[in-house]
Length: 59
Image (cartoon, rainbow, N blue to C red):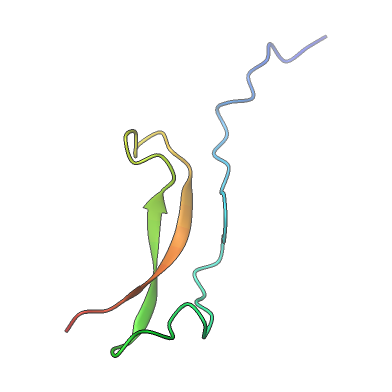
């Protein structure tokens, strides 16, 4: 009994799963730094997995 190979329906998070920025990632920021969710596949953002990237906040 197999599951029919239906394994690609689950979303897998690649990279950092918690939106926490390290000091190193925010080192070049003059303003505050925050974690932003970015799609791994920019061409297909709806079906893509997501990862977190640290970005400097603009005021």
